[in-house]
Image 1: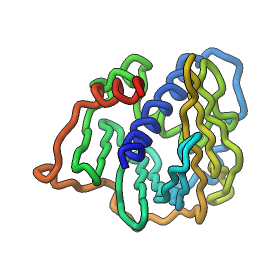
Image 2: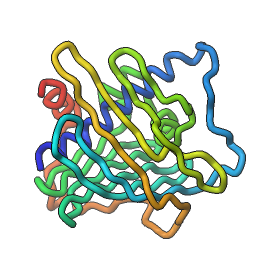
Image 3: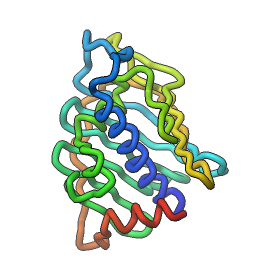
Image 4: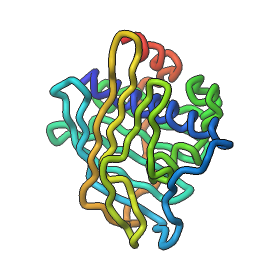
Length: 210
């Protein structure tokens, strides 16, 4: 279970690395981007995730509302074990197994602030607005396949790898049953009295040192 919690952190950390490099290269030659024609307001999908070089797998749901929220819910053996939610002003990460959570502004998370990352950059990554993904500086976030909602391309297979001098980490994520359902709560509710609030930066440091 601990690895699944760190998987949520890894998604946030690796997404920030990828989005940060994308933002830093705004003067670079243009790459293929997704057409905004027939852009859906919402995207929903079932997901399957696996941790690189591990037998650990889980399922869940990805739900996105354009310019409002990107929400990942992970399920293991039928139990909701974790949530990662990006909204325009904050990030929420919930470890339901160990009853702990992180809720922080983007500027309060070092990995995001140092790369000038906000919601628009992270949203673009999950919506596939750079159709070539990212592959640079030890970080590879590659789109292996695409689905469509209202004829708009949405990445349906993500392969993410982060290479250091000593190891390779990452995950694969596949989307199925891609649709545009709007009948879901766009904000995750949490009874904070039942959970322990954790410091995001301390957890990132623990992840990096693994």
